[in-house]
Length: 103
Image 1 (cartoon, rainbow, N blue to C red):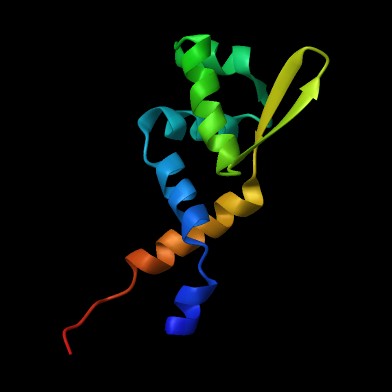
Image 2 (image 1 turned 30 degrees about the vertical axis):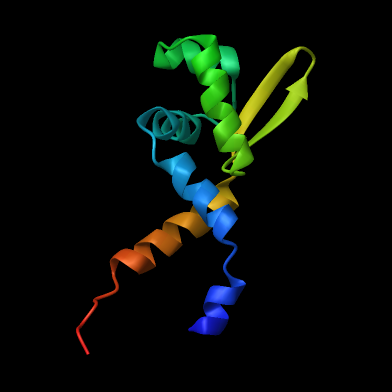
């Protein structure tokens, strides 16, 4: 178990948990899950939030690598990092299925 703990990047794990622990960011993830890609304008319009709030939340999601951005002209296009999100969901699923018993 100690070896497994050594292999865990706790900073990256914290960033992922922090990014997922906010209703607005979860809303953005759900929105991107329903659409292949969206601009920041489309995101804040659909979620009925300000542009600055959308940009702040997208920044956290980008930092955690859950969202990928690319520039097309003057627009930033956002998509989900499906591979990372799948890994995170599988990890959470495995943690929630563990039964802890007293020794």
